[in-house]
Image 1 (cartoon, rainbow, N blue to C red):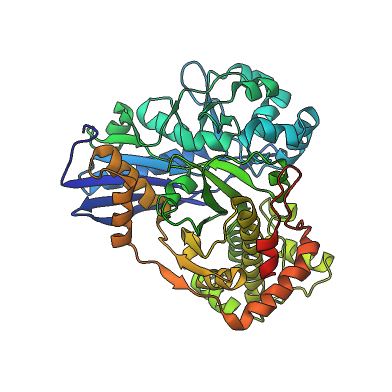
Image 2: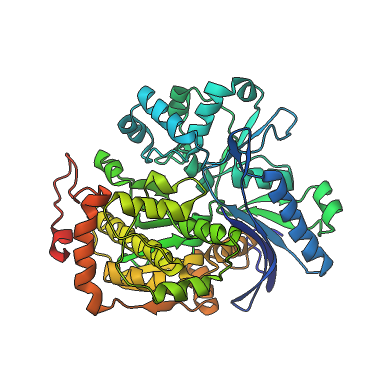
Length: 520
């Protein structure tokens, strides 16, 4: 199928590889309407081996093939396919194109120590100046440094380094390429030029093993003969390198270009909150607040936070299930609604909650350590996490308003978190603005829209947004005025407990925080 050719009906597959689960979804675009159906769902659980945490890439790739086989078994017509995934993960290939090792997981306990070691060589201020990305212990540069320090033999055998969505695409098509939104999660992209930052890479001692960067929406080609033979899928299917990072794919559903006073919040295992800016911000004080620059699909830049999202609740739910207490998400929300509000809070970004396991006890320990009431029941735990997330979103919004020089009046909450009505309402209450929740299937929808543009079914992102509006209806949540004073009181009380800095810009930028102070 040639790019730019109009077709009447487009049949698509989306592989949505989340940090906690994955899905293969079928989509039909016809007469300006998108219809989607889930074909296959699976869990994404890491594997610990020899004291190291890995992504189970081989199992995940098998699940993709299972999804393709399910589509083939139904005899579904398929024209195109696109894959998006979590970010901040790399895979290593040898000179034969074979996988050298299972990809390292960013929640591995070694990551924080390696980041500290890196910052002794290159201070975090210098890292930011050179990259305009906030240094984080989940970034692939940390694991490449780990390989240099601990597994030099493995690195010496490496012929190609691929980001995780590019790794999946390579084994599907045989094509090695670096899609730009996924490259942005590596900390090795020059956000100013959209090219690899070779100067920073050389400073870290990382070899030049990355393929050329390609733009989102670039056709990669057909599936390999091996995949076609094993799954029975059509050999005419065209694989498109859609926005590989799931947050970037989801952001297609947020009309940021035309809504200057709107924030987006992509909420899944991670919560990414941000806004559109014309140029990356170089103010060093940015990293004190945890902000980072990022790429946008709109030809501009994003200013955003990368937060813990539903991860803490997912771990609590998994822990209760291991204890024989299985609850649906709606049951957990109901129990939280029946629990006392403002009982206690946690800093969801604290290192305590980064690694898997014992999450309920970690929440109790944190509350005990900070002199708060200790949540005991399931409902109290769930409410604690939801209110704590909403409070974190409030602080993040205030920081974004200062640096973007904008008063935001609306937040679009995308992804799985938009199903959680309690979290949506608490977010509206804490921020004091309207929350538009949905689409739930934001990453998949963005994936399909990019496939349709690449296939020539639609001509622009604006046309895609009209399709999204016809396909999905957002649910709106308005702030509860009765709770406004309570949220203000909690915000002021908990900010110093969490170590949140007063929202005042750094040296070299004279704009004050008057807009924020007016509200607080």
